[in-house]
Image 1: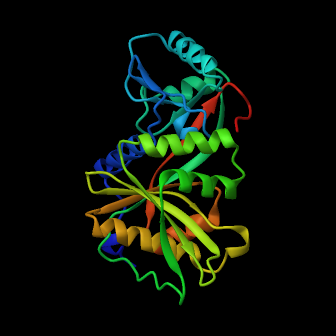
Image 2: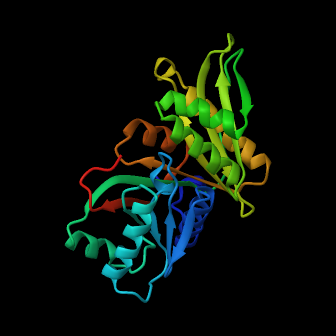
Length: 265
């Protein structure tokens, strides 16, 4: 069967734009550049906000660069992690870290919805409501659902408030006000909308709430000018991947992390 237009894989250019949009949307206040590498030093739970993004090939030898980064992360009380993408520089960085015994973990799939003009109807159930949540309320709500520490919740709220790309968070509730799902999107001025932090309470799963919420968020983003959408999902989360594929998302690229430590939460 030929691919429908919305199912076509993203071009390399669009994938690169998605990577840039994701970096902008996850920017914490605590970050710095060192010889072309972006160091993010947020105390929160999200690894993408407390890792190294190797954006450019620097001039320092790799071991010297890692020593400088190690000192910065130690000063912030964080484990040293490098996020590896198809765009990391130098291009053999992953192989160089592997040769030094660094551990690979958290395989993550980036997915793209190339066209937002053919979305299905969310078909909310009678009595369901989509309620906006400000940054603090959203971080608190999703943090409690995930069992995040108070420090992690505060760091999440701080990132949302300080983000150069505005977030819009929502809660899907039932007729009696029961929380059925939460999610948010970040919409940049480049027409790219990112879905983030979609979560369904355990008792509400397998009832279609995540699909209704995601479609509602994507339609809201499209109404505000979004032309494409993206998201990041753990590669081993088969049910979430299946949901997003049903909506129309397709594979764009993968990234993972490397660390000297065997296990990093």
